[in-house]
Figure 1 (cartoon, rainbow, N blue to C red):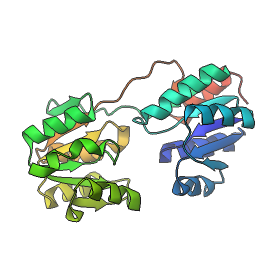
Figure 2: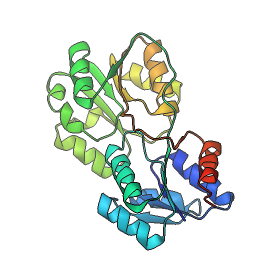
Figure 3: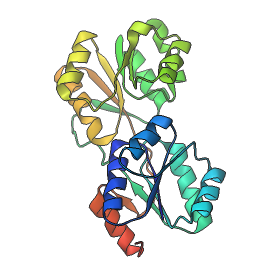
Figure 4: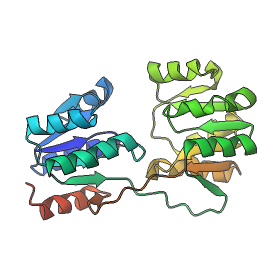
Length: 250
C-alpha cells in the first residue's frame, strides 16, 4: 500500500496514474475540499493534519510500504515529518516535486525567507502583489501600514478571515482559484497598478505570474525553496514509477 501526501493538482494526477498502473493507493488531505477532489478521481482518501506521531500510527494501521510526499514545495513541516516517519518505520520515502522555475532573468531577486521577501518589497515598492498563500502572513503586518498590499488567495472563508484579522482591507483581497494564465496575471497587475510581486518557486505554476511581471517591468521577488537531501526525487509519473520498481513496490 502506498500513502500519497496530496497537496497539488499534480499529486492527484500522479495518484490517479499510479492506480491505473495497478498500485494500491491511499491519499491524505488536510481539508474536506481536498478529500473531495481526491474522491472525485476515485482515490481513497483520509482527512486531517498529519503530525509525526499521527503519521507513524496511520502508516502502521494501514500497512504502508512506501510514502510519496506530493505536497507543495513549501510545506516544510510535512516534508520533515515524512522524513522522520520513513526512518522510524524503515520504509522508503519518495519526493514528488515540481521542477524549479527555469526563467533566467537578472531582475529576479531571490529571498531566503518570507521575512526577507517582505523587507525587500517594502523597500522597493508601493503597490505589492502577494501570491504566496496565507502561511506566514504575520510578516506582512508592518508593511500593510504604509503600502498597498494585494493578496491573491483561494476563495476560502478561513483564508479571507486570516487576512482581515491582520488588517488587510477587503478591497485588497483577490480570492481566486487557479491555474492562472500569463494574460490574466498581467491584467490583474495592470488593474491594481502593481509595482512589486512576491511569489514562490512553485514550478510551472509560478512561470505565468513571473513572466507577466517581467513584461511589465515589475520588481519580482521569489522566495527560495528549502532543499531536502535524498535520492528518491521524481518530477513526473515515469520517474516515480521507476523509483517504485527499484524498491520492488508493486
